[in-house]
Image 1: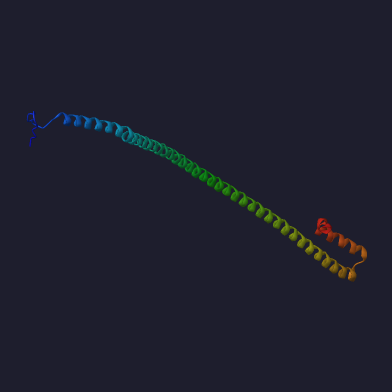
Image 2 (image 1 turned 180 degrees about the vertical axis):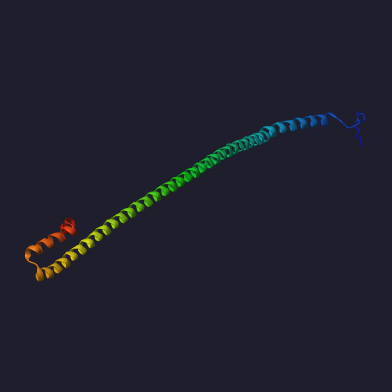
Length: 179
């Protein structure tokens, strides 16, 4: 529907000066509104997004650094564990070696003590044997003197008796008699 006013010719779209002025004013208002929105809404949103992006990048970098540090600590821990294991094995080997040496020393001392005891027992047995032999000789002397006394008292005088005692003592031996 075309409106026709006096002196106007019909127009195709009905464009008049008021419509063009309103349209230009609307475009300017939209442009100003766009600038205003851009400055007060888009820039803070953009700054927030940039700050968020930087924060995420910093956190990712920190996480990568922490992961690298954790890997280094893990390697150091594993190295320390290997070192501790090797030290423990060394200590155990040393203790085992000292145990074997102590065992050898104890066995050696036991053998020495046993040899000493056997030697002491042998000496004691030899002394006992010699003592018994001396006792037997003394008994023989006593018996011989008793026999000689009976024989002498029966048939010999004191001179012959002394001679017989001297001969008996020489036969037995002076070392036995003096012990």
